[in-house]
Length: 359
Image (tube, rainbow, N blue to C red; front, side, top):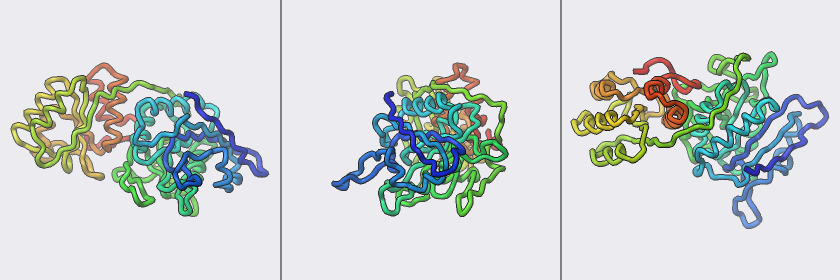
């Protein structure tokens, strides 16, 4: 891709203390109003005019922009490859990375990059905004400034947050543990099944017990392989056998993330269990996740979920749907042994799920 590269002179009087690469993919944060009042992509060469306090951070900042900013609703696998590749190629040149991304699919992108960038020992911080950077009450300035601080934060010479995360509205969350829950408020993201990595107030209060430990022995590896022959099926009262069979009979389909009720429950009708049995007999991998924002799938707690367990449906434990579908795409693209794929689906790869309760 023909990326646009801007190097910002942010240093005031002091020496440069650290360096950050910002990857601008698109989204509300990087938009501004033109003379007609329409939103247009912002020129990052002028960002110091919008956020003059950047000059006090003494950080060497480079911005790499996608040739054409994308609405996050249009994010696809190639965009994930581009983001991960930029980080991999520039890994040794920067202390941390900030990805500016639209909020709608940010949790999907953060989840996928946590799998693609194995052995990460530097911060990769996704952030964005609910209001454009030029808006009077925009949350873009604080989100970006704090994301930059987190991306360069060190303790004893080591990065404090060596993992893929999302910073939004004072909260730093593990990227593959959260989901977007608000479209009209600034607190757009929640992580119900995993504690926040940090909370930004007067100081940034890091929750060191929740952060992935730094391991200097790790070496970054990068995989660009994915298989999107997957789908999400959300159960609802009234769903029919015809609908399920139509989904499971799709040509080329390899995996299904099944969104069930509560702690993993589903209808106990014979037609439903029959549809699941036929799907598994055809070789489909089915991963059970809960429709609830919090809690976990515990197959076997109730008879309805025990039936799924007995049929060979896998339990996603406390994984989010966003992390589950991207994990399935990643594993199907990188592994050929079906039993190994199944085992890895119920085992944490990048802190996306807990070990407990995986039935």
